[in-house]
Length: 594
Ligand SMILES: [Zn+2]
Image (cartoon, rainbow, N blue to C red; front, top):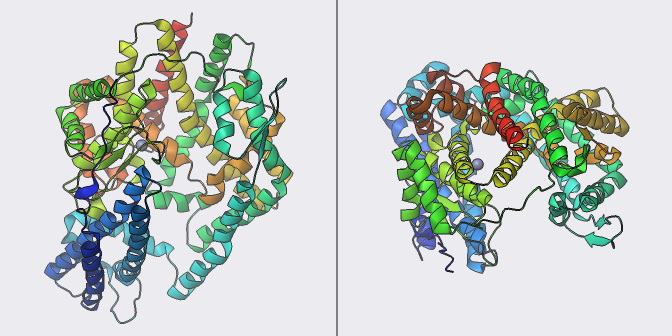
């Protein structure tokens, strides 16, 4: 059977054979930034400000073209020497671009810059007004000024990062990169794995001894090296907390929230509502135990498979099904998704040298986005196709903006993708004739939502408590106790949690490298699910509201965008809506499991 494979063509980013010309003209334009810099003045005319902004925005688009050309190429051909060369040349060019922009950005933020008069608030207002589409982005950047320190101190901060946090993070990698994982299921021969993904594959094994052995193999080296991880973690956590204090943030968490453009209150509410809903997943684990025919699930078993999916959908039929499902929701969504196929900007099937997984890359607002898939024909790869096409369609909804304002802010980044994925999930579920298959789909979906939603929320809850405790001089054993305690809170009596899970925190790289970031995963997902829940309740009339949200891109604050469609992201009832969706799936699963 033909594979119906599509491979993307990158000529719309930079025409074939034109990379050198493009790079040369980019370099010239970066130099021109110097002229624009000299012309900066609080008294400058709105017209010259507009001209400068349109120049810097165009340059940003070109930088994105340069940056994505080699790296997209490499993602489908990891060994291509040409791609590697283009990628590294682009990196150098982009560094010079970023550096040339720094003094301009600093000036826009209202910071003192040598050779220029400071941009005061009134003139900033006046000038930003002249570029309405960029007004929010520029103002938000300017708000960041209160969290920026004097230039001399910033220099020390930058150096401290290079000699402090960066090497600590590298050390984290060095320690864990050398690990060997000794996988020894009861009654079987030992295997030694070099990579975590080999071990993690056994989380999904149908053999319970293998699942147990996988977790034990994974955590053992972390346990053996736990004092090293403790030393690294406590230094990174304190460094983050001290920076937050020096930068005038009300809490360590507030620094992360500011970068993510979310109000503190929204995150507090999200975490609270999440903890209140941990019962849904506990009930799910109890039900899963029954379906697997065991009295109680162990933590080892939460991803245990119940049924293997047999059906496989040829790519063309999956594509048609996705587009049809989109069209029923909105013709606009289908049109945007179709545009990506028509432009030849999608790479659909796995092949040697191609990166695993899936993503959507936005290049410039006027370029049709690029999508990479590894389509395999199962349900989850159909949903992934819908998810990535959702991202792509989102970019196209926002294509009227300029480079800096088109890109969606983090809280809304998953709106179209999650909506698309949900539409697809419900469609596939309704098409499935056998109850057994339906049950397997729901089981997998709730399991996935546990991993992206509840699990991440509890990482952040752990981090908040851990940072606090470290300031009071907590030891490693106290951190590990805390971690285990939080797992027990999360699972209640629905699971048995073995003692080695106390070392799991050391395995979560994100809590070392990007403190408090993990909520970003569940934030986007839950927000989109809550919107979807509103759509289910209000029906067609809610579709234009979702499309309106999408067309904003990143040109307005996420809070304000949502307010315009009557949503308050700081309200508990809004977040509850998304858990009600999961609750609905659970009720359906219970009905099918009677
Ligand atoms: Zn996504």
